[in-house]
Image (cartoon, rainbow, N blue to C red; front, side, top):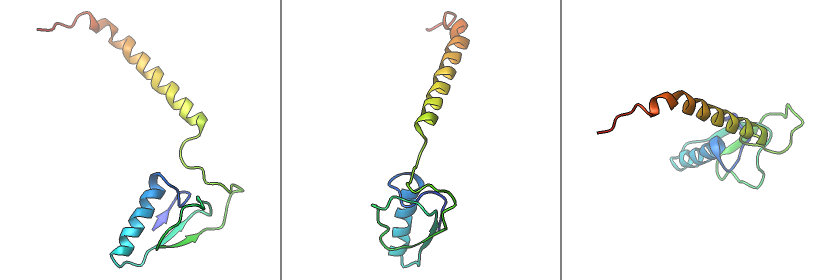
Length: 99
């Protein structure tokens, strides 16, 4: 398996890969995982063999998911779209006929 993410991690794709590897080992497959040099060291991969590439960045801790800045940008985008939708629907609101 190839884990193109910090591995292991306790959520997202990394968690799915860890669970799938356990299931495949239970089915008597030989599972080997190739992944980044970083991962959460407190999470153990039970039965699959993990191979790590050499680090290509000075980063040493596993950061999975969007940063606080990316989350804020997403919120602003959603609020902007909701406002646009409300304004574009405004002319139609008064003309709806309900029976």
